[in-house]
Length: 474
Image (cartoon, rainbow, N blue to C red; front, top):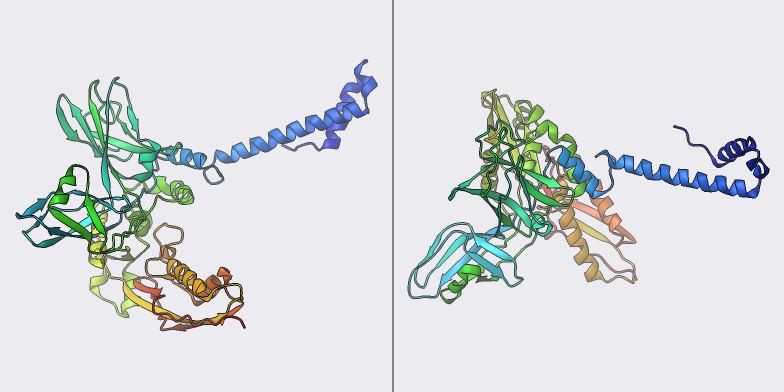
């Protein structure tokens, strides 16, 4: 619909009042002109507001976080949450008897972040033992069903949602506690299925919803819902050789053991960005976490392993080009490679194969994990910086920036966070360093940069061994 301009509104208003015996005396007056201006401004502002509100109704054009989250909830999309940092701890026994620590023994770092052991560990008298350690704690939320109703739901607080890594749902009915199973859209659920679905509200709250007695069992009055919330702070790092203090119900262990980090505790990730939520939710109905449409294995794996920094998947034809020959062993094989900061290639392989077990396989395909072939390169940088900058500060900040952008654990190999792999180009180095604004002029010499096959050849910048002899301006 066309919008009238101010002069058109004035003409229409003057013609309208000209037919009235009393109002006609004001036709063409300053009063009518200003009244027309007021009406035009009101209509224009209303039109602006309506246009902006209309844009918020579509996920592709929405600008408000709440609007994007509401559209995502309509598509049953729940974004990837935080993932915890992991590493290993060294436990020393200072008592006169062997000490056995249960799985999920809790510790606190000096920064008051919670940590938990991954396994049971026994420490001999006067000896030490190592155990896996995860930056995580468990918080329980308990509620009682007071009304039997369809699609009963429970919401976590915003504070808990922010740190929630995963949920376990335990239901107690008539004194018997059972763990219920997470479902996708109540798929294949019956009236007796003990399942629930997760959802994410525009208020930034994660929730669980139960069935209506037809698709999913309905909760009876008096049932107790226990949500075991596994909480993590995401992308934080605890360096090696840092003290750990037993906490909570395990605080008494401080009299019998000492604990330190044996390795860095790292590799965690934060919640996905709102732009990632927008992009993924637009296509989620095609995937909904059950199949790999059109061989898009990397998207599926990224949904299940969000902490990976890049993923690649290819088939028989591409493998023949990589190998330079044809081989019967390549038939019906899907080759996969990737990188997960803080994990070995063997550990990543296990995670990937576990995730792929849920993918229907009607064509009897075989999944083969190909280890990433690391191909680091270095640079030699020379140039001049302005006299108002300090050389040591420039080099320190530049190294950090280069490590973040081009280093081994950089997230920019998959810039859209959808499970892709983009190879570093020399022009990217030039452009990135220029954008930092440190140098009046500079030159880069790239050393040992090998060509990537675009699949499992992992070319990255070795910042530590690069050379930065940058002289100051005279």
